[in-house]
Length: 393
Image (cartoon, rainbow, N blue to C red):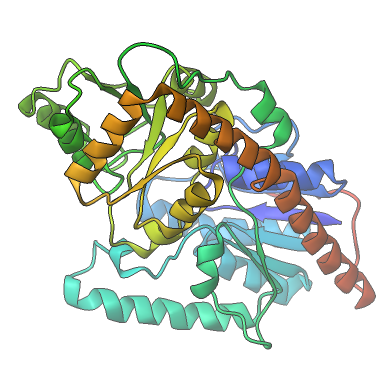
């Protein structure tokens, strides 16, 4: 049972595609191969073949024929495609080899807010066109894997559509147990941490505005991750303008282990995505579950419906209006004034990760899906090679 993970942008060490999904399938006994762009060190658990790729859209388009050639050469039981363009490539390979195709939907690709490079009048028509193309592709696809339950509305599944399985960006139990644990009730000024990719839409303007409004002038903020929209300089200028330069630190991109170790020294974590984009409404990002794993209470945006539902159900943080700096500042002050509250919320997050947000359960659904697809192919007379063949460079 050979599963080929096909990626045009996800690197060899991508957390969701490789370290969670592909590694879990390999551990379950599947022969797994990841065909992807070069540039990162692949993990030992997942055999990987990398292809040279030029940067930008032209490079992404140029790699697609080589991904197709590689997929046809491998002749896998199933292709697990990680982007819309590799989804289309996988379906062409299916026509040649008879393999099954799984599309792993990480977000709503037709969200008009995601199409910001287009003139405003064209965004909704373009989104409608993308949804139409996706409906056509879905009819030829064997299964859909969704990164969050909120994506089910974006990838509807009437009786004539493929089955859907939700596989969230959770943390394996053994990894969570090995992480350094935060002490949310530790004495001293409140230390807030924003883990992972940052940008205007990911909340730094409201975080700084709230910090400036907070009644507690000792609260500090550390941004541990890259500014993916190029706004790092604007962040620094705004912090200085608001008189926060001595209370705000931005580390830039760090290795994951180092980033989580720094986060464990904080008292609480922030996920304050701006309201508006549909992808923010459905998002269940790694950073939420990482905060839960290290025992940090979280402050999340109420417009991020999926995250807010997790936090309300678990009781591991505060849900605020991320368009309202005063509401966010009130949440900061509440956490600063009540170490016992922080401790209870941090413990609730760890408990929820053990009982309700369990990677092993999501991984089991993914494994079962791929076993069923492989069995269907075998029943139809398809071969099931024991290990992946070599793909071309």
